[in-house]
Image (tube, rainbow, N blue to C red; front, side, top):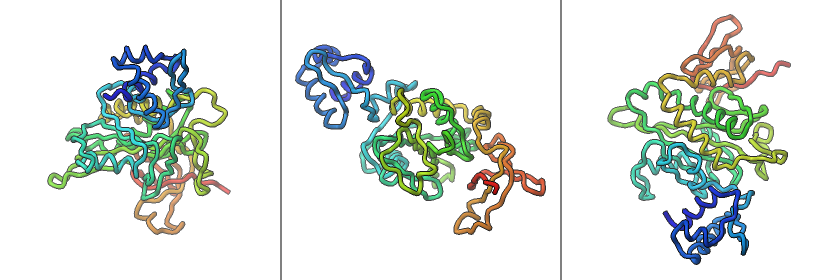
Length: 339
């Protein structure tokens, strides 16, 4: 690990105190000149480091950049590979390239590897939509899973458990109560703060699923600019009235920790209970459509019903006007606003 990386790890772990150049040099077993050079390198990378002649160095309380070192402090599994990049097209696409032995020259990645970025130029949402990913305000990350034969039948539930993992992590770390709109959007105060896109890579020879990549975009801070077309629906965890804020590194680590736990327990479906308890659609009238009906369809292709329950496979049970029930496993829904 480089001196810069070791220094960042040390500063992240000691945000509440000043560390002198001499203290840092001794702890890292390097010269004072090497410490100063590393400090300058971090400042050039955008880290706000207060440098006081007598007191030493400290990360500013307002410094909230994503880093593998900062995330690693809060991870329960310390051997996880975490890659943080300043900018990518899409973290899902970047992780897919790395997992498939892309041009970066990285070695084959193991299950649990995570790619995060400060900014996505082509963030991906469901059904080909984009995901607005401004720099410095969100968490854009993708995590790799390699399901074995025992997990194969439960892979469809990965998206569902990811929504529960995000909701649980935000409640735990940020002290904000969230709910989930079927299938996988996380809401806070009736606005969407998180979107999830799960993509699978199949093995051509066996026809089975080789890799599963779970992409998660979380709006943590209010960005400076919000596009007009999403102003009414875009939410964020913190606004200017929140005095105490968890760092994005801590939130990202909490989500990763929860994802790992729920994935390991995927076959027993223990997360379904919390998924149901956090649902913001059960008991409400909805409009819904399947992917086939949605593609290029008019409003007449949507149907209406009442969401009555969620089954053990994450399917939404909808009661139609004639009393019959239908279970949705894919598709789109919206809450129906009665006139």
